Image (cartoon, rainbow, N blue to C red; front, side, top):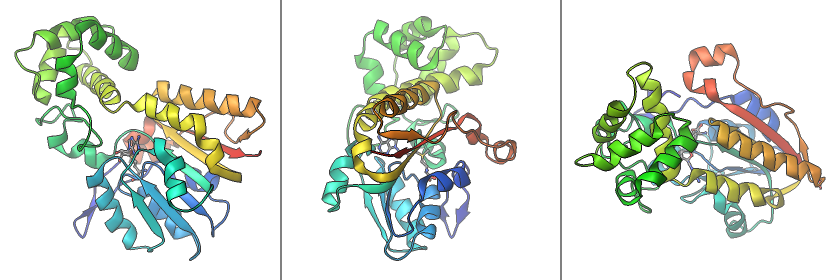
Length: 298
Ligand SMILES: C[S@@+](CC[C@H](N)C(=O)[O-])C[C@H]1O[C@@H](n2cnc3c(N)ncnc32)[C@H](O)[C@@H]1O
């Protein structure tokens, strides 16, 4: 994902665009939800493909991101509505929009390059910002508050679970013994004290991702969505989910399998689709992307 700038509005290099479009769009007059609109990278493509009667509903927990998406989309069409909410609320949002179901829903999980590159938000281990890491900066506890309030054993458990880090226990020990845990540098130091220097950047990346997943309750939000999305699609409507973490991909895979067993979902991707070598060369973030898609059939 690249935050290149056109007329000073940040843009976003969306992942696996042609795969998303070919699996998502069935009716150019339809209503589509982008549940993680980010800077609007995928949404721009979706809007461009729709007719005047078509509509895009964009959702993001991050209000800063949403206002950038609004500017990016306004260049293409006015046929969109934006909601500063969680995609776990898509059922309520569809009702508020005055409909019962939509033609397709896209989730592109994780965080955007704009969020990663904004040093003040604490997502990047390269940065020097405060330890916030919330997508929604108006609600919930920051990474600092969570790391200070949770007991050492719980911190070790979630780091181990979400990052598969073998030194999780030691990292938790050093987090709890640090003088303060307010900045990216503080957590980096606790990791540095706990792990061997080899491949340290990968360790930083994994542990930062684990903390972000916890702060934003990401797996729980995904589970809430997976439990009910099928009823939000019209018959023939499509679901497309891109995940970047094996735990997320597993949840999607299991949910799709269950719906298939119930005769409600046709799985369109027997195995998850991955980015082509060319795309990975051009956009390194696509390297870990896994795309799964399905169609509501009952
Ligand atoms: C990978 S980015 C999406 C990029 C987007 N597809 C694009 O092309 O610009 C993921 C976005 O999902 C948002 N997000 C994460 N969890 C969310 C949730 N539960 N509900 C809504 N948005 C969420 C993040 O704030 C971030 O902007």
